[in-house]
Length: 497
Image 1 (cartoon, rainbow, N blue to C red):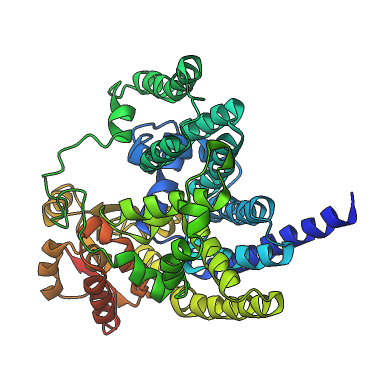
Image 2 (image 1 turned 180 degrees about the vertical axis):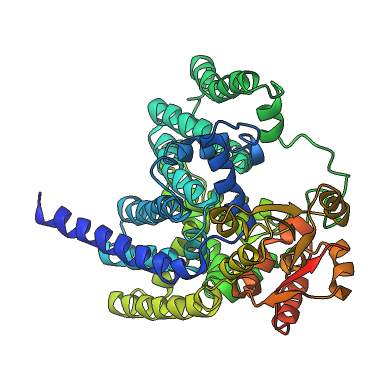
């Protein structure tokens, strides 16, 4: 192996090691507590036992069926978390390669910018859970490189590879559909006549494969044949309120993402987003023949068109899952343009890494603790074998180890139904406050049998993640989190009234 490639390999290994340490730190202390992660773990366990009832939950059968292959090897949640983490770190490494290969950024700077992304609050927090974001980050980075090759070289093979990746990705995360308008826009910009009848037919057949396979699976496991298609395209009545009384798919808080990036990612990304199209206007906006398509044009339209669309839809930090890496890349390009002195740029990147480490301590590690294991132990001691919770799934992995049945009620009506089904106790879990399910507030006046603090429920990320569920604004969510910090206990055991 030539010395240059050997040195580059060392950068990748070092980046992977640092990212793994950041995700592993205090992980054993907090475990798996967020709703989506625990639900995903629960569904994987169900499928491993032959129960396919929830295989199409969140339109993610590919995610569940991939991980179910590992159920014989993993007894708890941590094996699944670390496997998911591998995809998360893989996305970081692919970003480093993309910047080095297509932007010509030196290996050291590519490594440092990749680490800025890899040590960001979003990347680390998602790398410590078991939801679809990590594998989605990885698949997007693969698609990003393939699509650039298709546009740059008018490569039909790269286009079909992209379609295969998209077909796979849609079985993991239906939100990959949101990239289709971006692709249409780029095709209109390029207009190279590559997409003709035969190629489009091949693409359509590839895209149809998952729908055929999962339609047959649905029939085989006695579920409605259309369930996967309906789940992917989110076919439901958007006018019916959810438990948090949210309706529709839109959120008018247009500053949500700018505020999130300012407060929890890298603040300098915000001005960089405004400066990038100005500083690189010739590369982006100047008319050019199809043969002169360039990387700056590509990064601009992928990032900005997606960001513009997400400003209209329901909000959550995971809304920008696909493009966070590109936002860090844009920050570097702007910074390098303004101050073209390598030594200064490298020094500033190192300082920014220090900032990222401090932010991780403030936002992620400070809340890396849980009392759910103590709750499960107490329930076992008291002989309580079944318990309801107020919307939370955090107790589930710990209760499962002690053969305690846990059911999450999403409304007060569901809680009453569980009471009639033999559930005498409810864990009044402040998760309902993050979700903003107001119907559970009536339980606050009930006598408390036992209480515990729960650091994982106090993280601002828990509240911000639920903007998608409750449609509150960024400021309202942060205010709710600040109020939650004033409460000494977030978990309270009570009898269902």
